[in-house]
Image 1 (cartoon, rainbow, N blue to C red):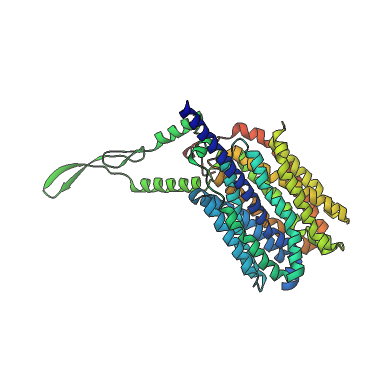
Image 2 (cartoon, rainbow, N blue to C red; image 1 turned 60 degrees about the horizontal axis):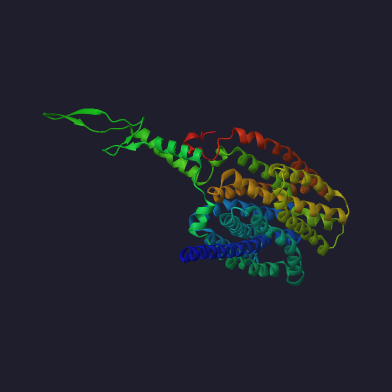
Length: 489
């Protein structure tokens, strides 16, 4: 009886300790993701300062924003590889150091090219921190993952809400160079925050990562049977490699040599094929063929990121174009941050309803497309409503997407796939969005044209969410072996 009671107390104490650590991890992830938004706040608030300082066009200056967001999301793929190899703690601390270094080097920028380089460094570090924050929460929670993901991901709303006024205050007090120097100190706090990303205990990891299901075991066994076995002479006993008997004559001695010969070019092609399959699997590219829903999700979020990043880039210049004070104009992004915070926290309630998550995501995109047209009304109240709606819909959508990715690919493939999703969907879309918007403004000299085109991109993506139920029926599934897929398509 005493031994059973002691064992029960030990188990209860271990669960309580694990719960406390998980809460600390979520809090650290929230603060780390809040600091990740600082580069975007700087690129938005300092846009006109850089444009006047370096006498550049709208498109060239917007490249800074494009590089920051693009590198942040593209380097999530690198973050996924580093996280899987070295853990979330190392990857996050490395990213925080790079981000702080990039801000520090921006203090001495002499032209836009210098800012492009430092923006790439900042984005790389921010991407590593972002990926580590999302993965460490996914590793810690199973039952309450939706709520934990909402709290951690709400850090983007906190940062978007608090960042622009802080950067505007630094700009008014110290100029844009001094603002970059102080922001470097802020970014350095990501290093100790990521130090809290301790990996879960082995017992917790086994609970969070259940073994393969029956269909997955079937595919795994089939894959093992397809691997050619080694004979006694060390040659693969496969269909394409064969062992034949050869008769060799050496001078006056006639002897029969029974050995193993094979076709070298066939072996070479097989080795190259296996290497390519290993690279495809390591980068998670085979997931695009196994889960059609994940592939479509990447395409849809690509279409969402282009207009959203264009809104973030041109919201402040649009407000200042109708004679709004700079402090009030920068507050528009704070309003968007408030909406983003509410959207990220409220997505858990939306997902707990009986409405499918895909329908909620499609509704968010349609609402964002309708609200961005309010940016063309010459009224600060309309701009504020549009900013809040953009923040709310984007915050809810990005948090829902994390849940959908985990549902489509599973926890084992989540670190690589979240990086793959951010690389293709977020990174490339964020790179093209501000550049396209800047080009439209240079051609038309009208912000209204920019927001009309961006609204059309929003609305074109929303109906595609109706395809998810169909793709669920026809996709091979994550249990399919890579060798069974046609990687040439």
